[in-house]
Length: 223
Length: 66
Length: 300
Image (cartoon, rainbow over all chains, first blue to last red; front, side, top):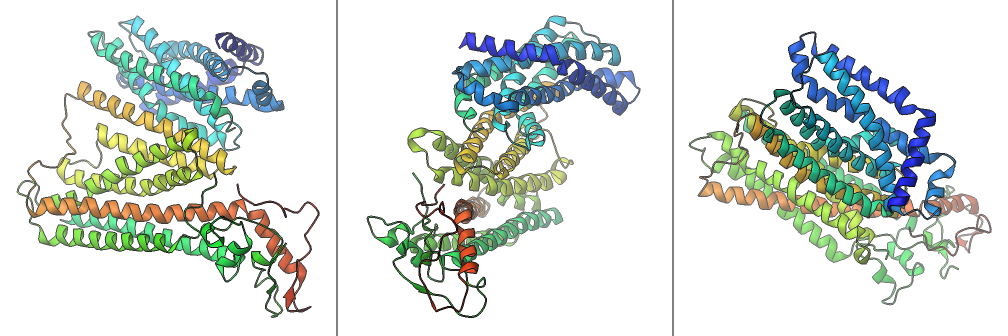
């Protein structure tokens, strides 16, 4: 399973490396979102700094939707998904591979957005390790659920509108937890504020990764 | 008190509307089915799938397709 | 082949009376017509639901006294928890369990899928009732139309998830594929709701200092009020059950019509093709082509 995962992840990342869609389209979209949020919240830096954690994660969520769409559409041309299934790749490995690829892209995007948020909104971060850990855990959760829902909606022509609708409510806990952790990190308060949410993220990730690994095979057959 | 009335009106009204909609949908569908299977519904079952228990037994709810 | 010949009315309009299925060489499984007992049960439940609801309204609005603390607002308590229990536990639980049963190979049957879909759709209606009645109750009680406490938020998220489920079901697909997809979505939603509830609960207590926006009723409810509350629960549950039965029936009929769409269209075609007036008796009409579905029992 792990070898298959590595194969698939490598393939997806190589495709990304060559086409650079995430870099050239999704990342700028994230930046645009940040700018729009700034317009929405007004010039008061206090407000923006306060809203920074939430806005960061909302921007990340939007980018996740785009990244998942991309991850799914990569398979939909030329019967690639059938080819994948026929190749005998372990579905769990396929799932993990795709999730890892999406996660990798997301991490890069988050780094970019994180820098953007700090610069644009003037957010001061007291406890940086919490940010890093929360981003990693949050990314895992988003990639896990996203890949799952991407598979469910792959092959549907209404995927573009349906996927965000299905995915975002499920991803809401990541938003909640991530925002709280950022706020704790910014406030520099006792780490215990944030660690509870980190634990929630861990549980969330574990649950959906487990679901994905077990059910991805059957889900694929619905496509 | 007007809040209470508003609440009751909304909830009961919505439930009533939905109930009516359901009944209407079912009527429409049964008519559509009847139109195709002919005036006597059992006519379809007589010439339809033969079952061990006889033609009438096939026409029961729910229709399951194992 | 047909084993009975049927006369068709010679009234000059072939399409007005399409050939009954029986007279054609097309075979489909019989449509899901309810048995007499099923019909009777449904009617009884419907009647009981109606009577129960009417009784609840009468008791709730007139007979019972206003509460010491909440005044007349307590009357909403006779229906709000009722619809809430149906939407959040009965409908949702049923949908989740049915979906699970569908996915489980041993118990897989389209029955469960249809039941889940019916439960979700009726659940959406009750969910909206819950949110609105809760909001209406909240305004005079807490002063706000909405509060982001765990219960309300989870209810709202559940509504969105339900709507997503219904949206997914609208996508045209083979019944089994659609059933599987919907079942997975329901499953994931079932996993997500507790997580959301938990998260929002934390979210609130940690950062707004326990703002106890308690959606619970005043604990001291007794006498005629308690009975009316109980009646409300029972009546609304019966309403749900009745709606579920009807909605299930609708789903079964729709599925049958959709599954046999092609065959039924052929029937209509043949009705036009055979023509009226040649004789009053129709023998086996010519099939449209050699690969007409004569041997197919048109079941999905």
